[in-house]
Amino acid sequence: MRPGLPARSRRRMLPLLTMKLTVSTWLMAWAGVLSCVKAEFFTSIGHMTDLIYAEKDLVQSLKEYILMEEAKLSKIKSWASRMEALTSKSAADPEGYVAHPVNAYKLVKRLNTDWPALEDLVLQDAAAGFIANLSVQRQFFPTDEDESGAAKALMRLQDTYKLDPGMISRGEIPGTKYQAVLSVDDCFGMGRSAYNEGDYYHTVLWMEQALKQLDAGEEATVAKSEVLDYLSYAVFQLGDLHRALELTRRLLSLDPSHERAGGNLRYFERLLEEERGKLLSNQTEAVLAAQEGIYERPSDYLPEREVYESLCRGEGIKLTPQRRKRLFCRYHHGNRAPELLIAPFKEEDEWDSPHIVRYYDVMSDEEIERIKEIAKPKLARATVRDPKTGVLTVASYRVSKSSWLEEEDDPVVARVNRRMQQITGLTVKTAELLQVANYGMGGQYEPHFDFSRRPFDSGLKTEGNRLATFLNYMSDVEAGGATVFPDLGAALWPKKGTAVFWYNLLRSGEGDYRTRHAACPVLVGCKWVSNKWFHERGQEFLRPCGSTEVD
Image (cartoon, rainbow, N blue to C red; front, top):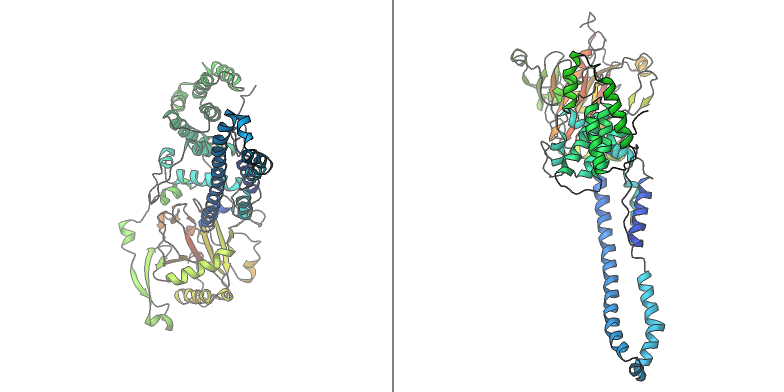
């Protein structure tokens, strides 16, 4: 017999409340709207800003509805006060009161005309305008997938930048200028999202945080017994039987009639009894560690995870004093290109081998804003090519939205393309379109190669492989968002208006595997980049081949 487990669900049932008809209608419309929207708002901060304006409009509409309800209620209260004063007088001497012909007329008129008019007033639906506006805004609403994606993003930031749930709950995140805290219900929602994904490690961390805040006296919709239900099962899944038993006993003390807790308690007790005497001496330390509630983050598919995340935090950078001596700054005129002789670009070495350089003042603020303006309506979830099938698909290790701009879209695109050609000395005739990307919550692109290692890529035969990458930083980022090279131990930080450039291929045409790189999760800020991938064809005389495989 297995232990009973909490149900997997995206949304908790709302507590039963007595509501006015109009408020009930509003909630039903809200729930109906949520289920009708395409997800992926969480993959682009630029698109998430639209939600701010949508919510602001809804708040204004809600306030107008409240004012209408208050005005209606004020009229009803005024009528009730008048009627109370009148009936108290008439009821004291009914016969004498109606003996006056005017009083008799007014009584008949009130009951025939005025009370029905009041009935019409009470039945007026002041919520109609608000509901109509809510329906119009439904295209802006996120879905369960967005909520799950946002929760995963917070957990990604938690892991990458070593933030404990308490820090995140209190809003203590480096680089932030706004105060934002998580309630018990928010923490519970985080834990439930992890649980629904089978991620018991994060389930434990966030259910523990919810429990801490409940124990501290914070009020919440979620009951402590419900938190303990999820927490006890999650720690059991992590192999901590002792703590699962302890938490289940605490759950039963709060809710003796809990439908699963009794059976779980007996199951855990039997397992512990079976394991007594079976534990080897070398397992004792691990068991004690588990009893103390210390759990290791599970390993995953990425072999260089630890190195990658260390670099994202600015740790483990291998820029030694000897290497630093080989890095210089200079003015770059693009092999004496006429356009750059008068106004050369400032060039700075970021890494010596492979050679990675940064150029300053590549794009003006006006150009950046214009490119963002024309790219934003075209933004779509960034995709990756499946290594087995070659089919483009979305992936959790690439969280951003991107669009591709042609020179015909705007003169600024042609101008930026021409500038990249002048700086690199490479032709853009065989290069890919200008790609513009905006990263979402915890937006990232885990370690990858820009060059293709797939023989079935159709473009390899006509345009050749991706020879070089020119990456424009179009925004500053308050925290996180570095471009890192795990094999090199290099980290490049976004600086608005600058660009970095490197070759993906050796002169022999072989891929330079040292250029495996990643875009770190954005901790705080809105990261915009654009990039141009130069292909081999057309560059034969601009970057001649080497004589050996390692040239």
